Amino acid sequence: MTDYHREIDIEVSADQAFAFVSNTANLPRFVPTTRKADVEHGHIHVDGVTGGRPYHDDGQIYVDANQRVMRWGSGASAYRGELSVSEGGDHMARIAINLHFRDGDGHVPNAQQIERSLDESMQRLREELTRH
Image (tube, rainbow, N blue to C red; front, side):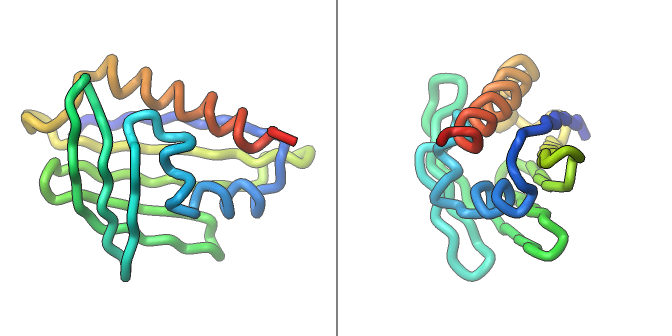
């Protein structure tokens, strides 16, 4: 299993940050590979582009608003992830994203693509959440 992690502190309340990230309609606004995401009864369907190729993926999603955590997974690509929002101090929200990919799976983008996507996601989150 290969793991990736990013976190960022953003000057916004943790509740406001979680409300934004847990609204799946917002996923294309901060996940650069996602073009569309639909959720129904704990299942998620995502359309996007990675490595210049379109993809369509189905999986499960779990949102716990009390703990401010989202977890998702996809059987097709042996991929899973978690996003959590916590109080970062001084009116800051700390957003952490963890991604996990099964090694040797042909559906996995290369490490540089994943790293770039995570960095861009964090930048987009900062822009979206601090936009007035």
